[in-house]
Length: 459
Image (cartoon, rainbow, N blue to C red; front, side, top):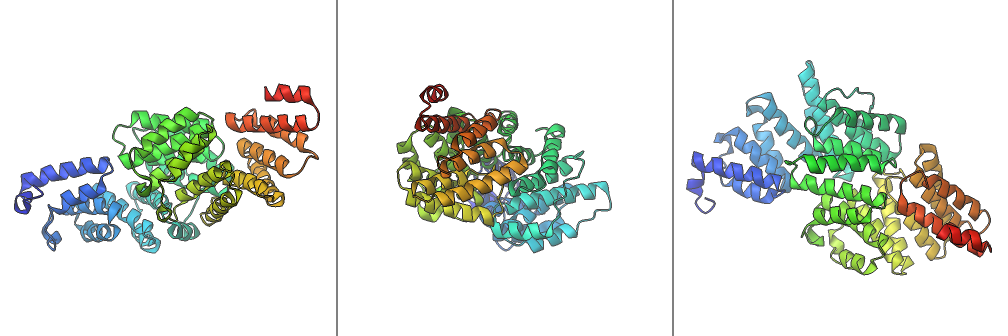
């Protein structure tokens, strides 16, 4: 059919190609979907085609050719039959505009929505949620958006649309370390009221990620497993993101085999030069998991598949830089480690990911500074993390920050700080962080001449 353009425009052929394009989108093969649908739409004759067909082309294009997608979606927006199709087109259009930095135009579309009825308000909430999550793919759009949108967390969450908006707002608030009790309450409301049958997997995963970034990885892992095992129609690109989040939660809990399995599924056979943003997080988590297992050779081989020009401004690449910095530290190259981890920290600030429980970059940066002979900078990072984690009641972040502080502060007071760190981590479920702290305390006891207690702690 693709080789016979005239035949491809017959009604039966268009129906076949459109069905195959929908299947391709579910597989994450947006480029193939665009090729199939463009064969059904003669160039320059979009105005005479079925507007729903042009909308489907625009949605597929918005994944790989945002400008064309925006053009096609805009051209048919007022010609689509029925509010449901219009909402579908608007959602894709708002997402494409936001990802390309045009938050002002996206906000205008939202402002033009009729909110005089419950259904109109629900549509607006869903579109706002789409815009928030789309902005996490573009730092400038994200920064602009957060200056002009409401991040209220007091919605009751009684509808799927309210829950989608609450989930996006809660994820952003926790990432920034702001209004944490309200944000966590909002995430809990989303997950208590929402189900995979009634709510988008994206909104449920965002709420679960808010819990993971608040040092509740076990709760988050439960949600990710539900979504992965119960949602057969999750598109492949979303499944890759879910698998990455599942691997991240497992790695935080010390379940290294599970983290490696989930990240292997997320990455598949994709070469490092072509990973998507969803897969980049899986790449970072896999590096951490391999290093947790002590497999520096495999971690180095994995990092070697990623060319320097593949690293862009997305926040997921910041997490990759943190993992690569940790790899350089394991390879006894503290200078390169400090460079990667400092760049990661700079990016995290730009993305406003200032919650120490959201990313462990500062912990590995502190140890890299120690290895490079700069305990003062390690102490600064540790002190800042201790203050933030203590005020937020994040046990894993607090325990690891105390362990770093003990390492940076010299022998005086080290044992007491490590005892405090171990006490905090013992209740957290973070098995590897607890083990690292116990090793540090055992070594400190041994250096202080307490051989028996050291042996007991290390054993």
